[in-house]
Image (cartoon, rainbow, N blue to C red; front, side):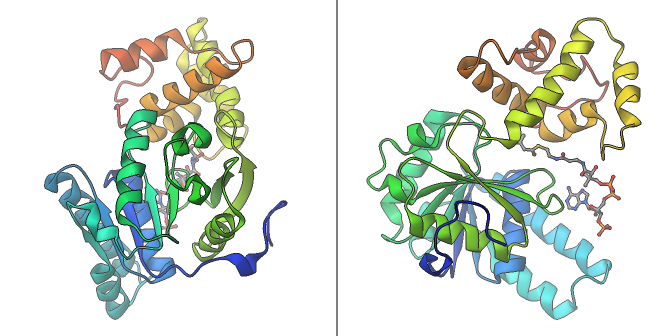
Length: 293
Ligand code: CAA
């Protein structure tokens, strides 16, 4: 089923190769998913070879797990392994049809990355961003063709979470949107189509929920009480385990974006800000790690 407001699916362009900027955990999970579902070559790039190797190794390990579980045959595993490669240069995207960036959540970095990608890809390549909160309009402001930029926001863990938030920027054209929706369908994700806005829709809801839990702890509720109180509601994960999964730095970034846009509706936890500024684990969970995207 097409989400509300979707353009004519016939406008979608064929995707025969995917490029991913970034080879961190989320990007590597995306690489595996694209290769498995689209059955096309996927190239990962990052700033150094060690990061690229780490990303490709992660994909291979995950393929090994799927093979061991019987989800893939040996032939399928071999084919999948050959589809995912790494490259130190974005030139490897020259013949890609869909390039997605999953680099650190920083507007200037993302703009720079997108400009570099635009310089090498062909005219019909879609440019996607996995941003969880940044403005697509701002991100595309200096692109030669901002109409091919679309938000393509995955949720952790990428392999498991059914949701995909597809963001239409003010400039995004119908063909790019149709392509993004078609890719989302092939990935077997359930897409919501939303407009460009601070933190879009999903993280606005999630931040409201998480923000209240964190605020309760800031105000003196013991962590265990907050965790226990929510356990009984049947959530798949306790709030602080979710914060750990997402990464407190990412959570803080989203909270700040929303606070700037709607200061009366969204606060920023002082403890969370201090935790991230200190760059060390520890305030809420003894083994909380700062695992940025
Ligand atoms: N990669 C691949 N597969 C994974 C995985 C990962 N990181 N984590 C879990 N899985 C798989 C497991 O292998 C298992 O698969 P099989 O059934 O095929 O064996 C399946 O998921 C279930 O795993 P578990 O039984 O170990 O664990 P679970 O049933 O407790 O589920 C969970 C784990 C899916 C993470 C669940 O706790 C959950 O849904 N949590 C909520 C996650 C969530 O809300 N994410 C959104 C975060 S917001 C965000 O990401 C975006 C942002 O912009 C900030």
